[in-house]
Image 1 (cartoon, rainbow, N blue to C red):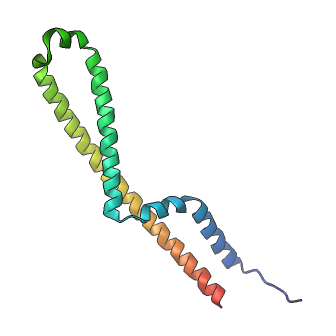
Image 2 (image 1 turned 90 degrees about the vertical axis):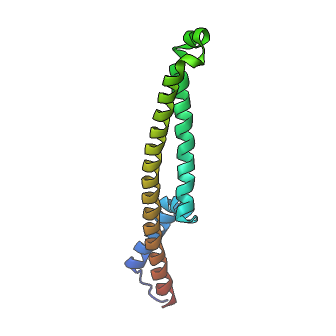
Image 3 (image 1 turned 45 degrees about the vertical axis):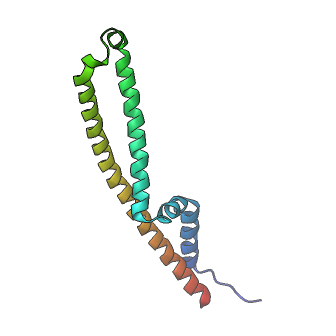
Length: 131
């Protein structure tokens, strides 16, 4: 019977790797499978769609207040408010997309750093197992 020693460093690294793989690592791998530009583009499209839907719902709810006015006077009397609504929409979309770009870029780079750390831990364990 031989005596086996447990290396605490190896156990800690294995625990970190397992926790990462079962936790945030799944999301990081999903993010990092795409190129940065592709990931950011998908987030921008998703954001634009959400902003557009939310704004359209808000405008519809606002317009419900004036249903009788629309029916009586028609849309031609509301050209100025329609222009204002369009300008506000464009401003909100621009601001929303800029914020989304910064957040998506930050998330992508954070995932990249965590994956690099994960790879270093795997390399350490691989070297340790070869010894």
